[in-house]
Amino acid sequence: MAFITVTKDTFENEVLKSDKPVLADFNADWCGPCQMLKPILEELSESYEGYKFVSINIDDEDELAEEYDVASIPCLVIFKDGAETERSIGMKPREALEELLEGN
Amino acid sequence: MYDIIIIGAGPAGLTAAIYARRAAKTVLVLEAASCGGQIINTPDIENYPVAMHISGFEFANKLSEQAKALGAEIKFEKALEICDGDSEKTVKTRKNSYSAKAVILATGSENRRLGLENEDKLVGRGISYCATCDGAFYKNKTVAVVGGGNTALEDALYLTDLAEKVYLIHRRDEFRGEEATVAQLRQKENLSFVYNSRVTKLNAGKRLESIEVTDKDGNVSTIELNGLFVAVGRIPENQNFAQLVTLDEGGYIPAGEDCHTNVPGIFVAGDNRAKAVRQLVTATADGAVAATEAVKYASSH
Image (cartoon, rainbow over all chains, first blue to last red; front, side, top):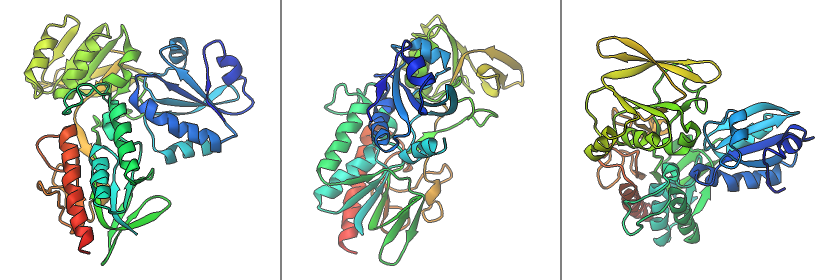
């Protein structure tokens, strides 16, 4: 499943009202670790079909970043039934990302 | 069994992989996080020969593509332990174990923490170890940088262009970093130097709200801020191998220019080796040397 780019206009429908749990990847084009993380997340999105994977560009969506208190990227936030359940900050090994997804 | 296992896919490890593959050895690279190591945090590399400007991300990608094109295998697993057998060395990860004739330790280093209560909890909520990564979140806000080396100075300089106010907190009254950067900082009207002081407490609700600073005479003051950028050095990531390989008091592996550790067949390359200059170019140089030595060892065992 592909990554969906989410904006503040689509955030409520795609994330908060999603049937599936959501992994939201807050990132930016200038952030090296975010770019390194992207291919790993794309691979994980293939094997973790129970999740919806969304990408939020913090430069385009600074209001969302502020609202969700994102102050360091890469920042992965898991939303379940409209609420944040887990958060992972910084470049993490693939195993840690799997644990993050499996722990929910 | 591989000829050579390289632990760490930063510039040192991937360069070692290139040299080992060109010597026709089988190579496995084990990486805990991502290819490139800490260089991926550098937006613009300007001091690597020939490449006038290249981003750390692009450098890391090109380097890993080169290693893979030459036939190096890269697996994203953290090396937890090495066992030294009679004829082979075994590297254990969480789920697997791999063996090889020779091993190169190219694990690099991680950020040194201040060691204050709640520090880990506040990472991403006011505490950061990378100004170029996180500075954008502090536009027109108040921040402090703690440290006295080049990283601290450069972080402070970068942040003066973004933040409304920057404090630079240093435990001494002179800096270890480059004089030219200090001179640039002195021109910045929104920067205040806080000398002879340490950060002694983090005050936070949901986010970091203020810090307590104690000077050398024991005077305590409070600085209200939105962000604290910690740049107090790095720690070599050698702890997992300390039972087998001798470390110096700083945790580095004391190997000479030939990159030999005290264990035959185990070599070290990059920032986790004891040395005077830790730069991209010295990391790649170590990779070449360690690989050449590991190739020799693997060929004769």
